[in-house]
Length: 273
Image 1 (cartoon, rainbow, N blue to C red):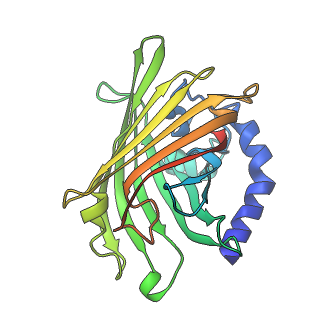
Image 2: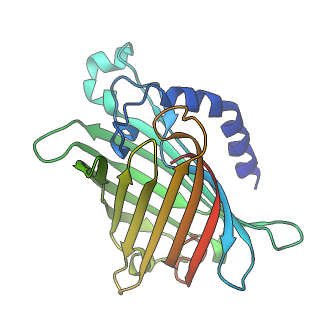
Image 3: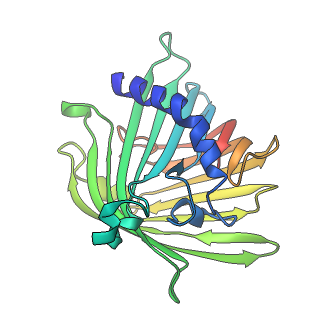
């Protein structure tokens, strides 16, 4: 909880900079700009940021809270870039997702996933629009029997296609697990080795993001995020959005990665989609 408080405070301090930095992010109406390295501010948005609430029928009302940002570690003026130009595309990203039980007296955060990553990018080629690859960690910050964690290498090709006056972006993420926690050694049975991500829409109307996972033992999960702008946008992907999220399957939280839940429907406010 101390870590959550610290990071939440950091978010409040840096959020104005993040939103302004998004003005310089060349998202090109797709997720691509969230990985790109050129002509962007050092600190900018990464994955969606939102506060939504809902739950399974007849179960507790729970909020889901997520914030995310990325940081480009070096710029063109760095002396390191002169001697090691490959560092120019090195990024640090951080995403934090919490489940918040609003039906309990103390309004506890039931579980929080902390997801730092280091990654490089390669620009457009005949085979992809962009390629991101690197190292990622995810854990819930707990100890002993409730501890959950994993470390993995990932590679994420990104393709964007014009479809019916909008854009469709396909960005699967392929994982190679380096290690899994003592109490979640069978994580791949439920999460699998590929996160299939799809994004469709345009920046002045509805947008839809879909995440699909298929575990090694046949378990699956699907998450669909539907968004609609409700204020003048600050920039591409950033502003105020009606945010509707559907989830069904395994692994909504790291703590209960092997428990099936859903369908779960939540609604609320997003500031990055």
